[in-house]
Amino acid sequence: MNLINTNTVDAEINPSNFELISDNDYPFCMIGFQIRDQYDQLRHHLGKAFKSNDYIHFVHHPEVYPLFFRGIRIKLHSAFNGLINDLNELNTNLNYTTERYKQILRKWDLRCDNCASYIAPGVHPIDSECISLLSQDHISVNKMYEDMFANEDIPYFQSVGYITIFILSNKNIANSSNAKALNEIIQKYKKS
Image (cartoon, rainbow, N blue to C red; front, side):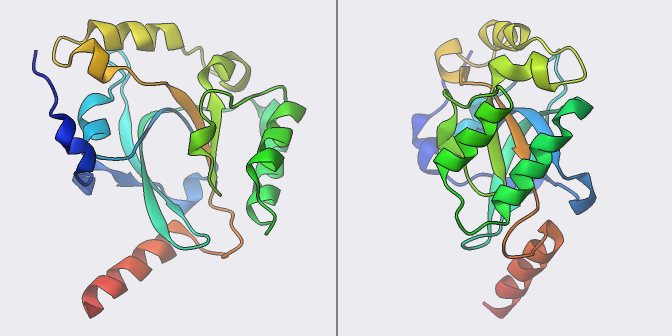
């Protein structure tokens, strides 16, 4: 077992293993972690029992920037189609606020008490305790935590983080998409 160097908190993410979410795959629903730096990239894993993937999602307003996630994709119950509509409406509104987002969640008997710091336009975190309401498949969050504690490669005190449900949306007031965002980044890179 090796300690992860805490100086990697200041290091950038290596994006080479992250896959871009196709615009056709939205709304994209997953359970896992937002990866904010190299330290998160090294320490956050759901265990061997859960086949997690790494994803890139773009926020389009007020500026374009990528966000990185690790987790497993989930299928929402069709009863939550109205939630998706409410979130898309919120994303395309200039008055997007954390309080308005929380009001939408309350309307659907959901909450984000433990993960509100992840809220952003197009990024909708929901407490993992709500997984049985949202997911068509049975997913045991307790098993995910057990696997984190049982990881022999990473000390438990470094690997543990709060597992979050994310509903990622590509509806935005900038009327942009991941493909457009990636193209914009490539064009800027070519000019520099």
